Image 1: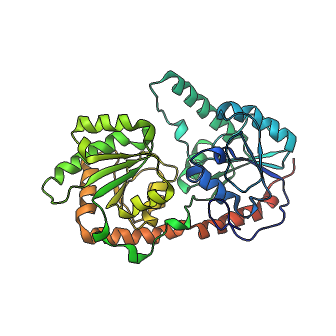
Image 2 (image 1 turned 120 degrees about the horizontal axis):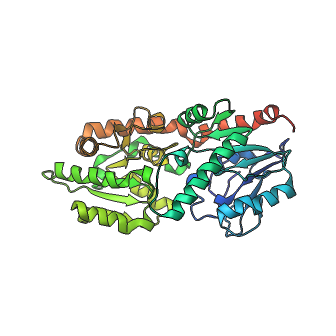
Image 3 (image 1 turned 90 degrees about the vertical axis):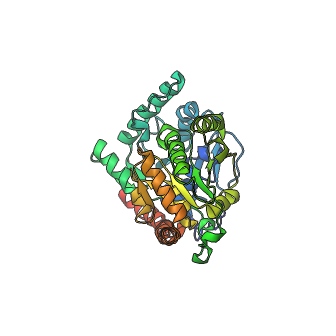
Amino acid sequence: MINSQGNDIGATRKSYPLRVAYDAKTFVESTREVGKGSYLFALLGDFGHVFTGIAPHGAVDVDLPLLQRGLPRYLLWQQTWLPAALRRLRPDIFVASNNTAPLFIPRKTSLIAVVYDLIMLEPFAPKNVADRLRGKYRAWLLVQTIRRSTLIITVSRFTEAAINERFPGKCLHVIPATIRRSWYVRRAALRLSQRDPYILIVTANMPHKNVPLALEAYAAFRFRARDDRNLVKLRVVGMSRSIALVLKIAEKLGISDDVIVEPFLSEADLQELYRRALCVFVPSRMEGFGIPLLEAMASGTPAVCSNTWSLPEIGGTAPLYVDPTKTEEMAEALHSVCFDAALWKQLSMDGLAQAELFHPDVIQERVRAFWDCLPASIEPK
């Protein structure tokens, strides 16, 4: 069976012993092909056609059964229209696929929460009052969701351990994230001579993504590379709503001529950027998984990557790891990868091998095992 993402999700099954509904809000978003949308497609596995997704009204481009109710203001919709739909459906299982769940679900419905990370519980303080209040609400809701869940699915052993530490005794299951097969390249594609002179960052305007310090690290890298013949630029993707912020920081650092901020890109264009980059820079201080790292490895592109949270688990020995609080250390690593051909080739090959651990075929086997075993582990209410 091929879903609308172009993924082969295995042989179609005719039925499932439990009635399963899930939060399908991500399927009405423009980013449904990446991130949580991509993860949800993979998690549905062979049963996407028999489970029922519940989503707000909005444009949908998926070939899965969806019940759409209510307006697309998520925090309000999640606590009103979504519980109403669950009362109508009365499923055996509800999968909260977006970190948090409604406060009220039918009494006989078991809650399975997908928790990508606990970053919401970290002490970030946005300057905007509304953002602070929204963040506090979402953090409180995450805690309530974890406490009420029958089972929690998460994406890494790191996040599993973090949840265990804060909420001991919860039933946890790890299903790593994956990316589409089209990301994976052959070893024959690993040619440094065909790469363009730029470092790629795929990120977002969130404090834990560490973008300002990454720009400082690039400025220090440019100072180190001032005598090298090739000018290596920095291309930043994912900051479309914060282009002015990036350019302002770049101007202050004296690197505005060397920094290119990309608008929204199609997946094909993004894959091309990965495959032509000298290296990918993943400077995050916190990640529950780290999709850009996996995308880099699958593309055969070396990564300079933070040594924090789940990233060493995902990257194994493939990236060049750095302390994301030390600009000079990051700059030195970028310089090494961009100008040491032997190191570049070794990291590229190591990355391809590591990426195979998260190939969609491997992850789908874990998904199948999860759904096959679930009915025996869920006690009727």
